[in-house]
Image (cartoon, rainbow, N blue to C red):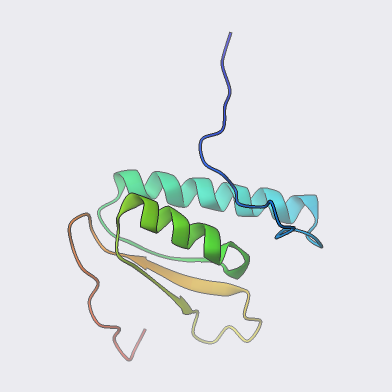
Length: 100
């Protein structure tokens, strides 16, 4: 029989997900799990993430000891998306380029 347990806190003790539908909560949880796995396996990461996951993704990057940058996705007037950039293990982030 399989054992299940908490891998990482989702940090929702203070109503951070109040007002979100169950489907939205699922997406945020899946996205956080994906970022957490990428932090363990991928040398460098650059991908859009949901703005609602900002604090949880920051914590995941800090826990992994990886330098990161979250910036608003250019051209997204909805302010629903951020661009997540994570440096390779042991590396540093380059200065943001104007075309990013």
